[in-house]
Image: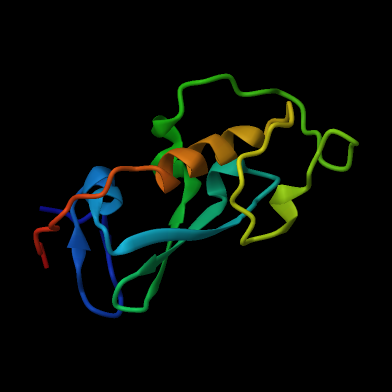
Length: 121
């Protein structure tokens, strides 16, 4: 079976997005925006083995089912400029095409973790 992601430090394998998010050893720590292609932005996660795992927003896109605005608010009075700070993970309230990524981040941050994660690697 093909792994969704494998840790390059300890070799731990996650076989699905949910398997990855269920792992109590995974914590989202950052987001690197790609204004040209928001789905190509990068989420950064710490793993309990001290590795940083990076995954494209594309892998998490299906988690959010709400509205996606057409226009970017970056640089306007409405914009808190969260996109410009990699470690800023607070939910964005701007009516902006980028805001849905912060809804995904909020879902990931609040994802229920399993009490005991089964080793798959």
